[in-house]
Image (cartoon, rainbow, N blue to C red; front, side, top):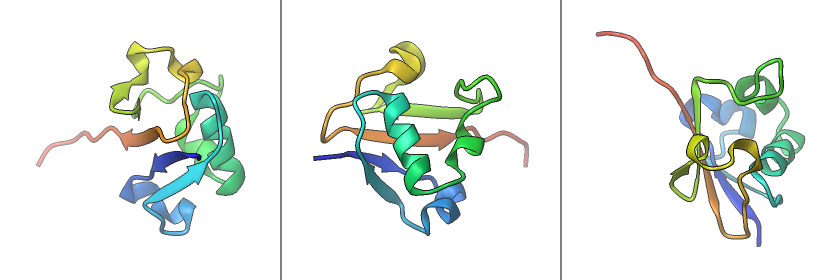
Length: 92
């Protein structure tokens, strides 16, 4: 069983319009690498030039914010859901 990655609407063109993608990986880093291998273009949207997560992208593993866990080394197990949530800012 794989890890399910929830793709936000703004990134769905990268996944061919799919709202979820299943990939393999035992850490968040491995899951995101597999996501980019399956659907090129995610690296530029998720990682900064140092290979760390962009500050404006929130990532959750099974509803837990990875910033308060182990970041990219957060363990992922089969059946987990990884949610990518871009930060939204601005006025009205």
